[in-house]
Length: 315
Image (cartoon, rainbow, N blue to C red; front, side, top):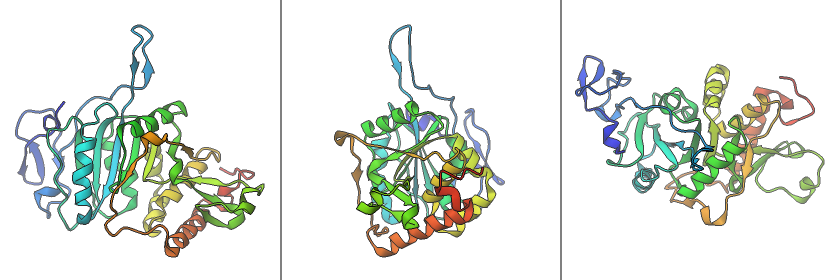
């Protein structure tokens, strides 16, 4: 199904956007009346997609698709999006929709490719918040059970996405699954964050706790609903820059009686491809590591000092 079938041609009347054709779309309120029309987004249509299952009658499996969510804000990354989006637009076997969350309130978002097999939306955000990854727009535009978060500087091949979705299904639709390649940990004996465990910590009887990364992270839609009800959590993430993945991991533990998000190993032939970062954060710098340590401690400040301790389950 071609992308342009999902979009109505908008016409502006007072502060609403209506469909010129009689398509089954609800009127869309223009959230940014002071901005150019490039910031407007049509509402999606369509029914819920199939769930993963094996058909006992004809013996053919039904493969579940996911919703791919990419957050972007810099015009420097437009070159990456121009490469990524047409490729994702051809992956109708594994992707139901692609949602690009545009976190820039000053500059127009890039144009989406047309005539793609996968329905695509670029959605301008009210504010440049990391909470947008888990926000109401993602809930509104998602019709799959799962959401696969990624970034604008990495490409996920079709087999990679299929592998992530399959492992999410078999591990349970309440699970959160990340790529082992991104494996980092909260470790009580270091009082902070580690991406490489020293030998003395590996031998420690104190457990390490998984911290998932939004570079490749698949979760059930239910977690967005829970996350958005926690108003203090939303405010906390806004106050502490680049802590959202650590706080999300702690949030998952808090709401599952201290279960960890899961890491899975991706077969070598399925590996993702890194794209130029164009001025992003260098994760090898001391400053970045120090920030991660701070975020681990901030998670303890918000959720309680026992959040990384399985012996104290005080929900």
